[in-house]
Length: 428
Image 1 (tube, rainbow, N blue to C red):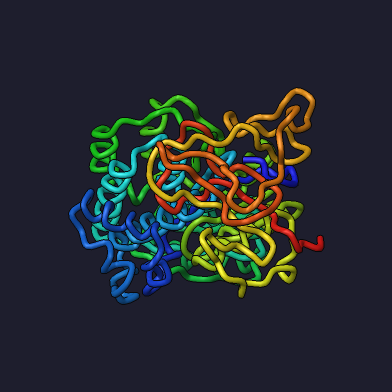
Image 2: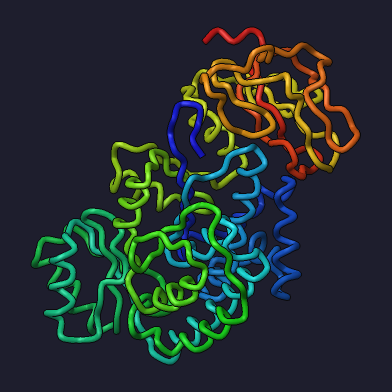
């Protein structure tokens, strides 16, 4: 998706290690919380417990960490989609790659949850069968990190190429201890042991492959609706038949995250939005693509900040104390008109975003780059802006159309945003 300033949005999804105690609690009263019940039904596990009541000790266990992070990220994604934002491309770090595939439409939600459970269980068993550990090396080049692994003369490999000067290594405990000493000699400023139960993304995970391959073989992949960049080669893959092999290879191969951000930038991404718990990927994006915008959405309050960024308005312009009335309140000078019921949306064709030629029925621009002749970008209180099924949708606000948030023929839910307005009194 290209925002109102011409920026191109890329959504990134975090992996294991981003989970936190009670990370779901801010979302309990949000409509997107319904995703949790759907996930629990799909996998037969109490996901709500993981997101609300599990201790950090429980959440550190690989099987729990992966399922909890996957579902939490999709709760946040659902909320972002409800305000009308969608990505032009996606990528996920390790586990987050599965979330990215669900977000892109390449993997159904229920199937994705089932595979994530199988993956987490298999990786937990592999960690017990072949113990290992991981450590982050800060202030060292990729080449020097690789050299340290070779010089250790043990089972040690680079597991994540995260950002310039940040590499994660993994292997047996003795080998990683040797790697970290050599890395310090080669100039690493800091070594951070990671609290994990195995040497992920290395050959020590090989015993998890059969179970993962079986789970991947039981689901059907579709072509992604937007490009998804794979961890193992930092390339996009539109052929759905390739994804089971890519995900299997990811289990024992390094995550090329720095290269992934470079690929997304090459696709035109200028804004990286991390969807889900934590904010690690946001920091990595700022290091990998310092010229780009990077922000994270982890809590409901972050949705306002995201809309600020998309609209290109500084955060200190907005106030949050105006009444919501009959629509959904965004800011003092911006509102969205929401759907009064569920059904198929038919926008009022006489409305258009000013100066854009954006046609409500198609979501595309007119040939002139301007609003179509006779189209209006201004609405008054009570004006008809569309229909959901046979129900009329009338705006409770007067203002200028900024953007359509739903398109003709889309099935919308009650409360889903339909139209973004800038109301009178905006001094900008």
